[in-house]
Length: 201
Ligand SMILES: [Zn+2]
Ligand SMILES: [Zn+2]
Image (cartoon, rainbow, N blue to C red):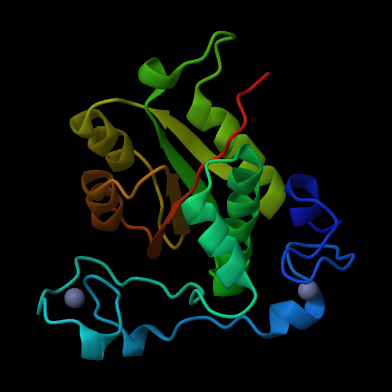
């Protein structure tokens, strides 16, 4: 089963034909990954339009350019606060993650548990971690329930990540947490920002 069918409807967002994923195969073929070599490494806008001269702390990955079939989705997301677009956007982010073809062994989620802990006790990040792991088939190494950077660094120090490629999933790219992972013995570290409109039951 295609993981996207769990979180998205059965119609192509662009041409409205019946599709098993966010876009039908024909529309998907029109979507291309950005080549990072053509972008400013800091702000990721086209290099010939950028004059920031800044260097990025990390290598940014290429996602899709807002052209072709997903231009409509992008525009509607920007002008709408409708919940159904949040779902579409989540599916779209997942599609980009798939297209990047990162080889990932483990996922970590820095969870700000106490802040986001919901009524029934499960932290929001933990719910997101479980769903993402279920969709991607990538095991969760741990859901770090920490609020302080130092506590996270300590936790990472005790982990044996030798030879592993680790994907950190968070609602924004937390630089201090990324730095801690980069200092570990993990072979590669990726970061993906993700959101959901669903509240755990
Ligand atoms: Zn289509
Ligand atoms: Zn720039």
